[in-house]
Image 1 (cartoon, rainbow, N blue to C red):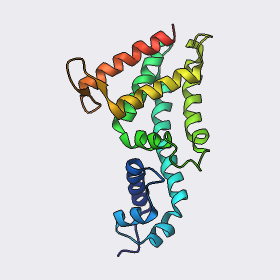
Image 2: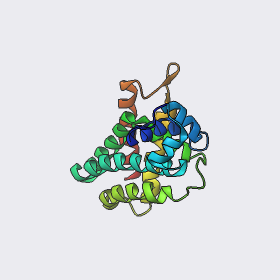
Image 3: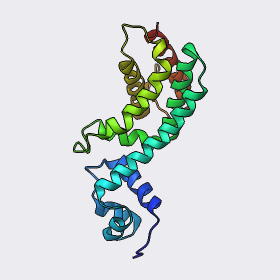
Image 4: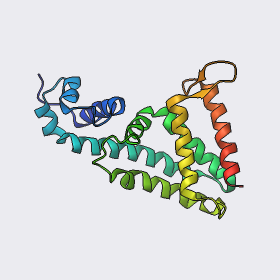
Length: 194
């Protein structure tokens, strides 16, 4: 077996498995097997499983932060700004299902011993967006709940889809369903900001 493997290849392979199986369901041996290297090589390249998971989550955060920073910087004013941020958030997660999968596992108590990750990686994103929209939020609406509603809705749609009126489910792999859901999010955010 090879003794050398690029660090980013290890991180990418681990991210895929953590997204599919969760942190708790992914032993380091499975990551090593998937990459075709011994676990000792993984340990030399990135460290133990905990260290690897933290790096996977950091990189997921950095990708999302970059997208949201651009959206916040480019967003106009008023409700149009909220729509632009909603669109950027939805588009990022449609294009990066791995990020959603990583967070979905956390929301069902995966890697519960790493409780600081929400404060490290989710809170800064909430603060970034809140700083842009806070002036739009009525006094009787909690800004964090409003943003939480956005996150829950997007992740719910991407994970499950939406029941179609005539029959079956409409999912994120259907561009028309994504656009229909996007319109719904705009209306929802408008109502919450009324």
